[in-house]
Length: 136
Image (tube, rainbow, N blue to C red; front, side, top):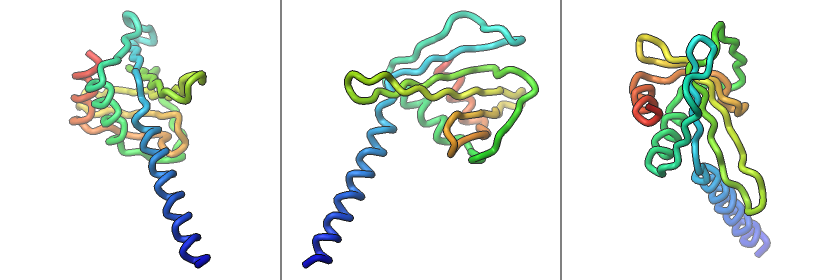
């Protein structure tokens, strides 16, 4: 009997944890985009709130090839800075996550994320093209 109860509790916890991690991913509400040229902010910060564009950018960041724990120091300032806004519980401030992106002439990009499990990463041409479609 105790084994059945323990098994049910373990299954329940697994479902709860999976549910929470899924909701964390889906609570992205908006994205701010800043562009830089020659170490200067170009134009104003663009805010992306359309659900399909937010989801497209979320997908782009998930497709990046990350090297967790890698601390990268870049020689120049990023070309694009993206801030993701995640809604939390009512009455709580939004959780922010920043990505710094360096675009390359060959169509790829390098990216540095704040999350420990991300760190330094690269983006394919396809991901960069999708990113440019949404942020331009």
